[in-house]
Length: 460
Image (cartoon, helix red, strand yellow):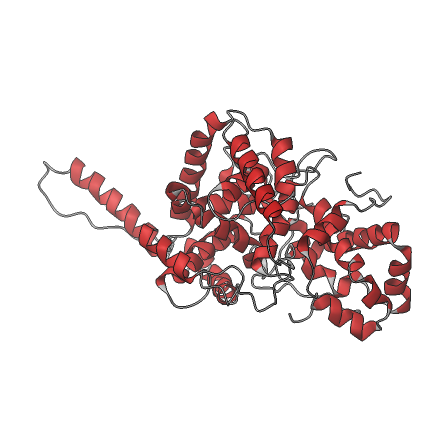
């Protein structure tokens, strides 16, 4: 695990994998700063998340007006992939079941003390679209909101204020910070010297003073220019985030506002976590969270979607952040270890398919599942299906990674016949461009899997 400023909690088998405090991943949210020094692990900014090669690691790869505008423009099913949830005509029984689920969820979320186990059971079957239910449920499932409703306002206010403070300290340019400090200093001096006549005071400049040409590592200007490369990479990636969804893409003020908020979140995360910084693909992981929170019909929550998304993004990454660090690939917490667990899970559930992939066609998980796991399946399905899958990922009592591996294994089992009849090229193409599938069937297969016999935490 990363040392120093980045301290990730070690999940227990029967507990959620999310940290109790943001400080376990983001230094700026700690009440007491870590004195142990920085991490030795360095990850270069702008480095891309890519699939494996046999002889190498990676390859290419606001207002009410705005709310009304969103409803006019946005369509969460306009991904350039066909609809994968196999939705057909809705029967009367399905409508009744959906209404009952919504009523159960509304009742549970109205209780003074939320029963998280019951909430997990409801969410695992899919949360209703629209309204505030999914946004509130996700915040509870991620541990951002406490079970006690009486504490919600206090927790939200504190976390939103902390985020605003971090933005003010870390996302302003040095010139803006200098101007603010000078104005405060000038105001104090004017108040002190208001009754004193005499020569005007001049600002003294020392040789050690910070300035735009400073090369010192402690220079805020030097650090600012170092992060410009990260900002450019983030902006490029945000332009490619769900390009067919007007919520994220296009030249409207609405979509630009959303991209700006997401850029703030990703840049702030990079600055607070210098051992990880920003890695291509984090934009994809952030997009479902920010979308759900910013389309919350509660206006106050929607207005604070940026702050809430940052906190929940941090909590979500705490369970898989090591997958983004190439230096940890071969460790017990790295991506290679997780891919190995996926292989073991497949072997435990279908040895025939496992042998065919591993030995006959030699299509190893490195070639297709790296993107599945690191991006939490956000590139494999349309956006509406992603939200449904995430309901199950976030509601799993054993953590996101447990359910994620189950879904990845189920994806293999659901195309077993095609894989058994395919060769290396055909199978690789199939798994890198996953076909249409009924999402509810996929999730049922995932939930019914037999856990592997390895030491990795898989729920029984």
